[in-house]
Structures are given as structure tokens and as C-alpha cells.
Amino acid sequence: MSSVIRVGIADMNYCKGDDSITTLGLGSCVGVVLYDSALKMCGMVHVMLPDSSKIRNNDNLAKFADTGVVALYEGMVKRGADRFRMKAKIAGGAQMFSFNTNLEMMRVGESNVHAVKEALTKLRIPIVAEDTGLNYGRTIIFSPADCILKIRVVGKAEKEI
Amino acid sequence: MDYSGITTIHLDVLKEICNIGAGNAATSLSQILGQKVEMRVPNASVVDFNDLLRIFGDEEEVVLGVMILYSGDISGSMIFMLPKSSIGRMIGPLLGRSYTDDTEFDEMDLSAMKEIGNIIVSSYVGSMASMTNFSIRVSEPFAAIDMAASILSVPVSEIGRYGDNVLFMESYILCNGVELGGHFIMLPSIESYEKIMAVFGM
Image (tube, rainbow over the protein chains, first blue to last red):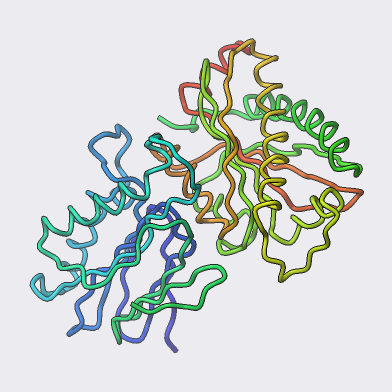
């Protein structure tokens, strides 16, 4: 029996083999998957804010793009993943409410995507696929067996990247 | 810093403020919708993000969210959420339309819902302002129909700058005696929450 591991908001987890890992209803948050295809293992983090250094209460590493991506990467290495084989797929970072504003709060999706990409670049992890931005929520499911990221959206057909 | 120091007395105060707002909102909505509308806030609590995302039972439940930002002496956001299946019941009689589960909502529907959300949220803000003597300005309403968790991620990420939980005001909305399953969530910034409590001598 294969099982589906759930990742909450500001949370991360890992899975391997025939299991899969999911996070439900990403809005402005970004879901980052790191995987090692040879070992059929992966990790997923659901980050909600771009930058931990601007926040005093920043103990939860999985909440922020900068610390979340690094913590996920370190967890993968600790579980035996090869750092040169690791790849990333990312999704989310939508602007859920559409209007003209420069309010940081309403543009947090865009900032999250930018911060995730910056963190991955620093770690030299290639992003092989992404489905980010726009104005709708996404549920994502990743299976390390085939390294496919499935994306579910309200009123649209399921997509695979 | 977060809401960890909050007591049941604090929550009761917030609940009562919101109940006054709910009463005012129900009166205005009854007039506009031409239906008997009742609203009350039976419970106020501090909940973890992940529990909040499940207030409709399922993170993926499709809901309408109307969000309004407020600023001035206190600041933060408020969001009114209604299951997609209840939208038609609320605006159907007003617009003279009938809705099924497969109805695609158009600009007219969304605009009517924005206005309803605006009335509800403004009533809460109004009662807060009159009880505290704070000057509070509200933004125009913003609306979206999508998964509950996706909509909530916007206000939750803002409050996430301070901690891992939010102030959740559970609310009941009855239209002609039918419970609509709507929720109202108030997210004052931490500074604002302290200001509100200070006014009430806490």
C-alpha cells in the first residue's frame, strides 16, 4: 500500500518509493519540491513568506522561503540525497485578489516565488518545472517514483509538470 | 510575540464587539436582500493556521472570500467567507436569478457578493470603531472564488509575520432560517489587538 503524506502551511516533509506527498490549496504560498530521481526520494516545503531576516519570530524555518528551502535541502542531504543530482519543481505564488495596489501584502505571492528561486540558485539546484503566479489556488501532489508534479485547480483539468 | 497571552476574557470582549457588528450587519442585509437575515458570533478563539485552513472541513472546499483591509488607529484585515453552494441562496432573490451547483458566477454575481461582504465587514469595523473611539478607514472590498486554503493564505501570510495563529470569530448567518455556513475572520495586527484590549482596560 502506498500512502500520501500531507504537508501543512509553513510545514515540510519527505517521502520516497511509491508514496506521494501533497499540499492542499496553495494560494500566495509556494510549494517547493526537491527530488533525487535515482533514489526515488523527495521533500516538499510549503513556504508563506519570502524573507525570515525581516521577522523577529522566525523559529519555524518552513515558514520562510530563504530558510525553508535550505532546511529542505539539508534534510534531503541527511537522508542520503546526492547534492549534484537534486532538482526542483515549484508551484504557487498566486495573487489571489486582483486589483491595482502596491501593498506588499497583496503581492506576497510574487515575492515568495522570487525568494524561492533566489534560494535555489544559491544552492545551485536547477528548477526543471514551475507553475507559478496568476490568480488561482493550486493543490500539488508529487510522486518520487516518476518525479511528476500534479497540479489541481478549481474548474480546470489536472495538469502535470 | 503572538496571541499566546490571550485569555477567555479577552476573547469574550472581542466576541461581544463582533456580535454588535453582526446585529447591525443583519439589519442592513435584511433590507437589501429582502430576506430575513440573522447573524451571530457564538465563538471567538485563537487557532493554528492549519486548523484555520480547515474551517470548511476541507482545504479544497470552493468558497467565496471577500477581503477588506482597514487602517488608521488600528490596522489589519477582515475576511468574510461563504461556501460556493450558498452564494445563490443569498443573491438569487436580489438579482432575480436562479443558481445550481454548476452555475458559473459572472461579474454581476461577484459584484453583488462584494457588496454584501462589504456591508458585513463594515458593520464589524463600525461597531469596533464606535466602542473604542478609534478612527478606522476601510479599503474597497476584494473578492475571489477559489479553494478555502488558497484564499486564506493571503491574510494568513500577513499575520504569519508575527506568529503561527490567528483570531477566529466563528459566525452563523441564516437567510430565511437557512444556515449558510459562512465564516468571518478578523485579523488585527498584533499592535492593534493590544490597542483594542488597552481600551477595555486589559
